[in-house]
Length: 328
Image (tube, rainbow, N blue to C red):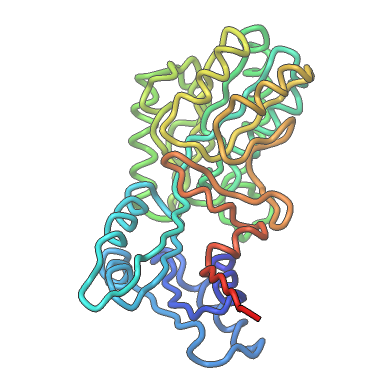
């Protein structure tokens, strides 16, 4: 929200900012900060409401020139489709930045540092309750280190505390709303049929939408929980025969956002750099936590338009090029 808005501002545009209906307060505080910083009235216009009503109206309006969106594949494709249709009075082709979902992976090769790999997978899979488009939802593990990795993965996951975020000791809070809560629990039930549940799997008692970190092992790469975005604290673990198999599994997805590989062999790392088809690839570190100005972020395939937010080239997307020649 902040990156899209400020990128548009610094390139000379006015903005209608419509936040997610699940988190309007954060956007409201952000707009107040912009006003305190001296932004002139009318440059950023704050509008709340549902995506189905307010969002659609903004996308379809003939005076809208550009749409920047972060969210689900389903909504991103709908926006792209609607923006492509000219409306009465519209004299331009609307452009769209769509940052959508992911089914992100971390490969653990046979020579990986197991402790580091387990820590990276846990942080990537369960940080912010797995509610990140970049969250690791597939750990693809070489069969030679599979048992050792599973042991360390489960041990580290069991150390995670889940509870209200008012307590800093809690690493995980609730998922965003009841709809997400029910969707995630439904995928967990599917996962129990498609693999071996080795951690979590049940909602926590008490008030709130709390789901513990959940791990399903021995999952077939074609299983639903290995293919569909869950957007919650659910990790699938997939066994790979070798690096060839691991890279094949990593690319067996309609998404292409983030991925990582834990490996010490420089030849294997070089292969991953060339052959893993994701917009952001990390070597011997977790697949979340892209830093603005350091890791330009964006994916392709059904993960979006590969806009690479957080980099200098991103700003060019909010401009129009004009060539001028003058005879002397």
